[in-house]
Image (cartoon, rainbow, N blue to C red; front, side, top):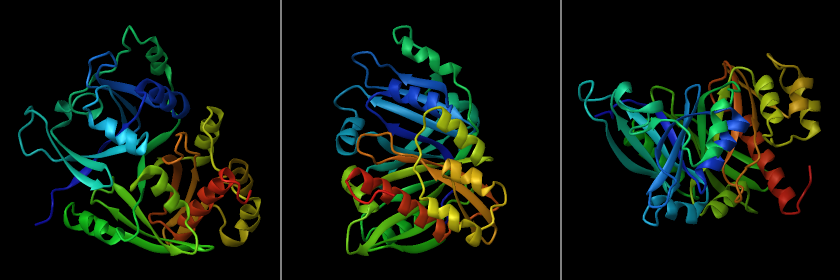
Length: 351
């Protein structure tokens, strides 16, 4: 029996300071606070702020009591994605109370299933949330409502780092338990390092996960580094889609978002590999945007530097011009860009 269809509802992050993180997403990326739950005052179990831009909903939850599960998560992983929540078609009639259930997905990341009609799930589609209003005792929340959108539209995909040997069972879990389909698989070798990946996607195409595991090699690479710093499997990056990567990246950079740089040789060789359909090579080089292609078209992408102390979670901006899959050029470019930054931080090769 095929599982019921799902759609992406929201992403929840456990963070040590919800107000600071809300300010970061608002000021840097243009997210608008739309809901809140709990209170940051003493005695509260947690404090959550829901942010939205386009179809993207991010919930930032700060645990406030020792018994909240977020405390254990933060101690093990630091700030990061704890829940990729999925909307399921309600089995009850409109107006019935919202029902939720959760299962473990990978590492300490879960999937919460949210059942209920749009009118019953609260502000921004998150159950139990109240409309956002800055608390009088927290004046730092007030400026958040003035933020303007930057052109981010939806979550294109999540990249997930897994321990070696767990890729196959994780793919089987998504196929057999959640009814996802495998749409692409690849093994990429960069120097002495290798990684294997499989992309799984739900029928609605709103939930796409690139599942990646280290596949051996003479030296540990960036996947191994993530697993070590993160304390196990987890979401390595979230990719935000846009209709114009050049305009959006320029706007985000002006707001203080830091992006990975790309070797100049990449752009010198680009005309022989691909003729960009939407942007000039000069514009891409100026902003360090990568381009790749598959049978259906092209895509443009760039990766941010991680803003977190452990250098684990980071973000991606991606513009698809017909491209639907994940070509080896994309994965290899990501691997090389992140590996170059890691080597810079550890005193290795400076590209």
